Image: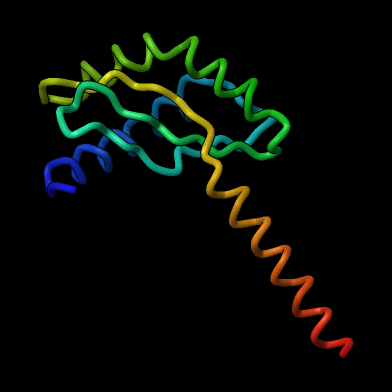
Length: 115
């Protein structure tokens, strides 16, 4: 990944997180942008979202994708760069996978202690 692309990803993550915190009222959930994956040509950027509790993830991502036009406009005004990638919110599966692996490791550890 190029240095410019890394900087763009980092900047988008920071600014999108601020906009979500400021403009969306998610009192029932903790919403986090875990990372951004922009294409090399900066046409689109996938924003990976983690939500706690997990049951609310699909609802929150749906709300974010419905409000993406507003978020996109704010990003366009904030950032002095062209092109600004089209933002697409997606569920971050890595967090859940990591939790599952952690759970399995704990089970193995408990089994080893018993033996």
